[in-house]
Amino acid sequence: MAHNPNKHKRGSISMAHAGRDTGGSQFFLCFVDLPHLDGEHTVFGKITNAEGLNVLDKIKQGDMIESVVFSPSL
Image 1 (cartoon, one colour):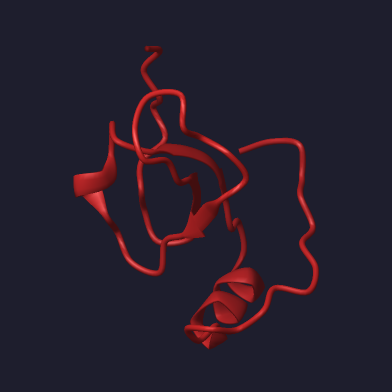
Image 2 (image 1 turned 90 degrees about the vertical axis):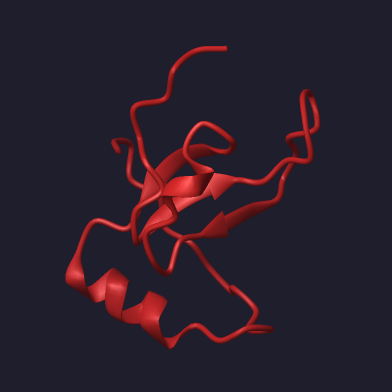
């Protein structure tokens, strides 16, 4: 497995999985630093500005994500 230098820091976006070859379309947002997940799940993106972090702070359990905007670089 390749080493992923990206860490589970506040604002990171990571792929959820239940073991080898189980990655799918589930992902999660890190509301706080989660270093115990480094090396277990794959960080593939991050929120890069204060406006985005303010939106993250407003998300509550059960909220539906209606739209997402991706930029090409981490």
